[in-house]
Length: 187
Image (cartoon, rainbow, N blue to C red; front, top):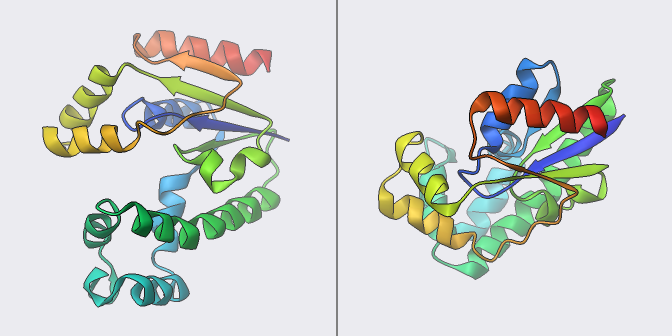
């Protein structure tokens, strides 16, 4: 079994690459989906409320927007959130992988290294796009305001990626798919 990480900045096209991989029949673990799933766990909810207060709840569930407002305005609170969620995300992904019988498994997420999942990856592929294209994608495809998209991009300026291969996602989808298939066939 090979485990391959797919990483890159928000708006670089990781989700597009993940969709291509799924369409090609590969198993893809989406770290954002894992994180959203874990935010429904009662133990995690209780721990987050203890750390961030009752204002992060809406109908007894985590209000991700309320939590985001708190953590993205404070580096310390973001680190606290990460210290709570990252070990659980890592454990969840490892347990998921251990249940699978796949030749290749992909892990899709910007924070593969920060979560510690780079330790289990055989290879990491960086999906790269110019900042202006990432900004355009966040505004046009995800419906974010220009300001919010710019804040997200600026919040990731300190992220450094360690990777084995790089795909530049500024070409047509067919070219990206060809680059991806060639890369996988040569790993």
